[in-house]
Amino acid sequence: MPEAARRDRVFLVVVDDSPERRIALRYACLRAKNGGGRVALLRVIEEEGTVEWAGVGAMLQEERREEAEKLLSALATEVQEITGGLPILLIREGEPRDELLALLEEDPRLSILILATAATGGAPGPLITALTGRYAPRLHVPMTIVPGNLSDEDLERVT
Image (cartoon, rainbow, N blue to C red):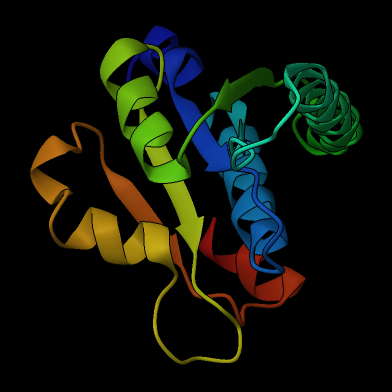
């Protein structure tokens, strides 16, 4: 693979609150480090239900945005420690599945979507279910689904 193509690959990780996010993030970082490329982190802020006062709704939305920025900043440090480079930080508002699909359609930099399964087994999460089912035709980049029960040593071995 030409060096320019290796540098241009961007591994997208959805930053949700699931425990498997750590596995997906570590896998993406190791792939970027070992094979060339960058990591992008997407945090989707879900919209608040009906709020009677507009000012309260705006305040709640601003608080969630600040929390998202703090979380992404902390994760950016982790990404930089592993890969040596800064990640692309993305914050969107809305329904996570819809925002992820829209971002993948809009941003040509994104090359590979990285998701992880729950470590305990059971049904796949809502994003994996949607993207391997009904919404699969809208996915225009490869998707890697990492088993959520992999150890750090396993992740090192497979990347």
